[in-house]
Image 1 (cartoon, rainbow, N blue to C red):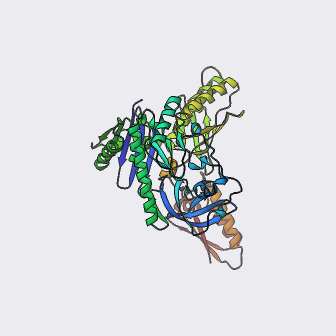
Image 2 (cartoon, rainbow, N blue to C red):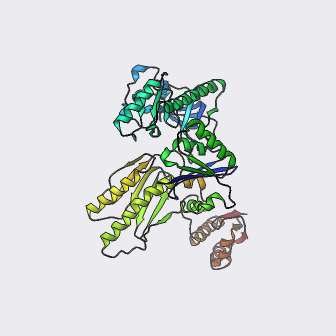
Image 3 (cartoon, rainbow, N blue to C red):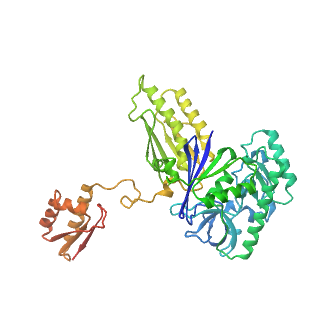
Length: 507
């Protein structure tokens, strides 16, 4: 498949879109001073220990304190080696694991026995700040290269699950064991498949030098401070995306273009990745039609080819996706119509999850089908499409009600969280009170307060739309208040008010 990475650089924002046959399959956005960089390493200070949650708040210098769970403290707890036993065989390892998977942490181990307030420690961000929550951090440091992942606090050598050939897995493991003269662990990434000893050694040497730099900087700086900043977005994508996923990079910034060429030539000269500098008058994303594609990726409704549609609703706790027949009425019978709609949705939903980077708990409500064979057919297609995603997905079988529950690993924020913010009108509810409801609410408020002896009149401040209502078709509400209370009500138009906002002052 022809895949390209299109990168747009501005002084305040970097956007990258991974294309497959000119169709966007992943969108990445990084803002100036972004907190999105998973993998940053900080020297933090323990602010508060929560024994009831078996966690701690860590000051890492960001706006919100980071959150650390006891199970992410293996390197500190391993001082008492009798408490732990190795629990992960190399054949079970994957490049996405973290160090805590290597150790059994007994339930008797308490965070208050390991940490104390004011203590300084090295932590790495696992999940970015989201909503009211700060970043989630771990002391299980992992440093990724192109072919390897360095685990400074482990001695385990593992191989990515995605490398399935047993002979190749054994070959790679033997090379790393032979090269590794340290007491640190390594995971062989998928991109290492077929690479020779020299290529792997170059990556290993780079990671070891980087870890020495991090240790020296940690000793030289006080907490809270950042010790290691993850690579900027274009370089991070070159490092982390498998070689077969990037055949060509198009970038519209000459400085980044030169840096990318040097970066690839220095660390991975064997990779056949071409870099092209785009400098036409038509903006790069307009040339590829990507501005429209990004806008469409924020829509709540996604129309299917048949005329059916899916609805995506992201909430704080989970994402709900509903499948509907819409304008599609079919030709033969209801079951066939529903099956076709569900089959189209089964292909489209995994694509949308990847494109929008939706993570966490996801519930898909397919249209109910009567034939068990049809249910199985839809689920198998949905499962196969989910397997194309680089991000880890866990699927539960379709329920009798046509529901599929799944989880998609969440690290960075979804596209809607990056590009959007809470609506000032509805405050994130997804709806606002009707004009009639607000008018009746004002009526009750005026009546309740003006009936008090200490109040002689009211000043009602409203936006233009409510003002037009009270001077027009809802004038009777104000007249009724005056009639019942025998007190004056003055209406004042306040231009900066949203249409459903109001304020009442009493005198």
